[in-house]
Amino acid sequence: MKRFLPLIIFGVLCVILVIGLQLNPKEIPSPLIGKSAPQFKLPILSQSSTTFTPEQMQGKVWLLNVWASWCVSCREEHPLLNELAKQNTIPIIGLNYKDKNDPAIEWLTKMGDPYQLSIVDESGTVGINYGVYGVPETFLIDQKGIIVHKFTGPLTPTNLQKDLPQLLAKLNR
Amino acid sequence: MQSKQNLKIKNTFYIVLFIFFGLFMMQTTFATEAPPLAENPELELKVMQVASELRCLVCQNESIADSHADLALDLRQQIREQLQGGKSQKEIIEYMVERYGDFVLYKPPVKSNTLVLWFGPFILMIGSLFALFRFARKEKNSMPINTDSTAEIEKARELLSSSRKNLE
Image (cartoon, rainbow over all chains, first blue to last red; front, side, top):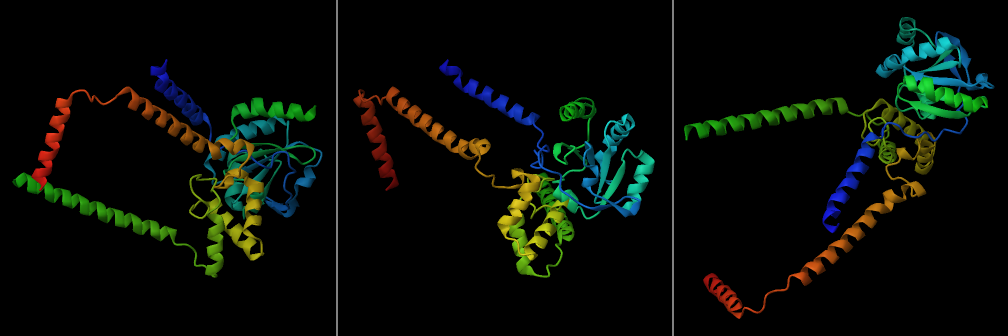
């Protein structure tokens, strides 16, 4: 037994390290979950005279998807968002983060527009208030304006087919 | 001999090339790194001081002071504005934690879920020191010096004295 002690210690260390490797360091728990979504008032993309505030969504469960035309992984999740928009289960609001209007509009015409509307956060201040650090990010906000969940990085099919329906079922209960 | 010299020349050539390449790289990084000229160096110093306490969430092993990520630039600007607005370092750090969580701090707070992080290394060190002492004591006891063979001790003494003489 004693002879195998180093081997056992080594084995335990290996298991711990392997578990460590499975974790995603990019997934940082957001301190905003369970808190009300930060307020803002920003112009709407391609209708710069009108503004949007989260208060307008009061009473609805909705998604706030942070995107940009320069963001490569946004391309990856965009078809999924288009599909979700077609299902008409939940309104999606886009937050066009640190982008220019022209390429953003072009991007939406080329790739399809899943958003009810997109808001323009050219300076990125609203992004900071929402703790955005890696586009794309998606926030699920409930009827009372509280952030229920945050998806960091591109949405995956499992996110939309499993996680989101589960979260929505909990909210509608 | 000839080939050896050739090799030497070749090596020096590579080293010089390497140094030049290194200098060239340094030049280019300096060129892109040039920070915007501070209007108020004192404020800038304070900004960097606060920024160095905060982790850049894009490139997680860099502080916001060191990082060139867009987000780090924005956050430095945010710090600058808040300092100008008269906020204290503590208030700014609280502002960042509210948005990005404890992960943004390079020095995580002592909490129930960070206890292992804070005290684990000390426990590990004390434990291994204890094990080391125990092991050392056991080894000492299990291997007593053989004092029976007086002949061998004599021989060792002789050797020692002769080497001492040689030194003198």
